[in-house]
Length: 403
Image 1 (tube, rainbow, N blue to C red):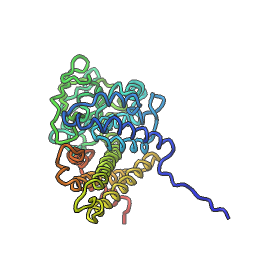
Image 2 (image 1 turned 135 degrees about the vertical axis):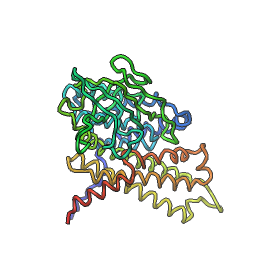
Image 3 (image 1 turned 60 degrees about the horizontal axis):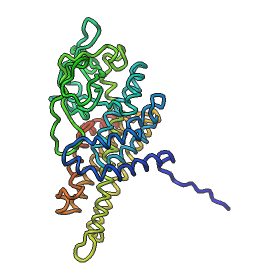
Image 4 (image 1 turned 45 degrees about the vertical axis):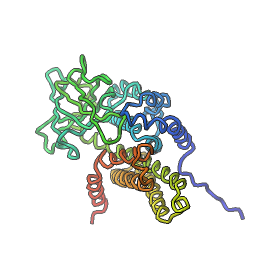
């Protein structure tokens, strides 16, 4: 009697092909160059140009606008591979991805036609801005303002903080308070599509009123710039309100929706950096010898490797579930929060265990793990801290399980 057997496939054939292509690109182009760019805190221009050629800036943008039209699950797999090479590279596409998501879901036809084809090729790159110097997790507390003038345009004033790609981007999706008297405050917030001159510290002409102070110096996550943005009398045309005039007052909900997919993105980055740390630990533990044998043969090291590998796989599965739920049109706020919380903490923990396995060499800049050790903590903060994730998860769990 014949027994039918089915082969388990974690990825479709198309997903396998694209992730293998990205992995090869990472191994050949990113990992060998990452140490130099990190050391000099230098933007990886040559790598970004290659990413444009591979179409990586248009991965999730619809084909009608020149993109690949791939789903969030596939994008998460690509981000994992890029982060495995160097987390800063995934940062170059992260805010760009959020910007394209906002446009595709909430943008007017004119906004889509104008921006998406240029974004798909990487001709212009996008940034995304919520935080302010005195406002991080409490987004409703933002102080930057937008006031509509007699000619219909909006005048933007205020200071934004921690803007990834803040200098090199050509467009910034920024949340402003358009109605200071709104109650609750989130109903008085609007998202503006603010164009700027890439790499210009002081914008002139049509983009006058936007200044980018010197980039923030960081412990890790180097190469990609993190900046402040200072809006001072910046004029944003009415047609550049996200969603047009109907988008006024809807910015908070639009941004929170985007953060949901952004959290899947950060979770994928956590998986990627954890995967690389595991690879480095496995290699080093089989090469390094103590007491006459490789340290991988010592039970204490094997226990570390067992926990690391298990956490990486669990984080990967959580991340892919959240992405697939979103792709299916299901609610994924709880799952995205869980994935982001677990994967970011896993990234930090697995990197630290790999660091311990390397011993004194882990503290040396001669070894790659030292860079990962500086990069990993970013994930605990970006797109909502672990503490905020727990608040979100707790609230959503209660909502779904009312007594």
